[in-house]
Length: 196
Image (cartoon, rainbow, N blue to C red; front, top):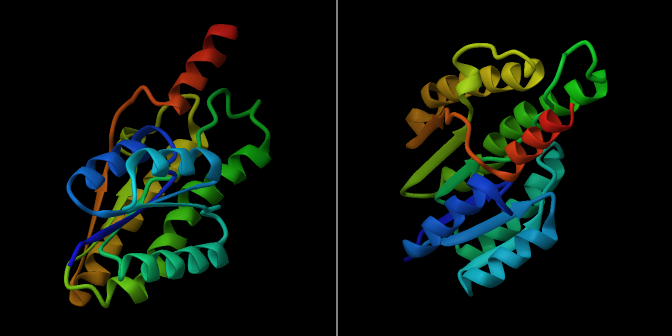
């Protein structure tokens, strides 16, 4: 029986790289992103064992819908990767409060939503993993990234706690804290800096 992986925010960048890697290893891959068109392009490039869909990670009801759909298609769920995230860079005083709130809602609540909504499926799997993408910004606070850094500290804490809470269910929870990766998100930051 093939194993499956569901990746949020996987239309580009790190998420897309994860999708390609696991597809090559024979997994059924769920490529879900707020940008459904780009997710579908990647799924079409990969082939029959890839499924794309739209997901706003801040919407718990959407999580429930897409995880049910994906699990039925893939005959279960083995790995959830909470990768979706956003970043606003700049002086925190000059950043609109709505941008700070949106960062927390997507980067923190999105991960919490995913972990919670996936539990019914992961509990049924013989091999079950949750992988949360945090950041080097969760190791120490970084200038001009106040809400992003705070959100990634929260993801780090959530991951450590979930690892303890879910171990008795046979679900392993890991987090990763990559440094700067040249993804489209960081390319946008570079553009903003060069125009300042």
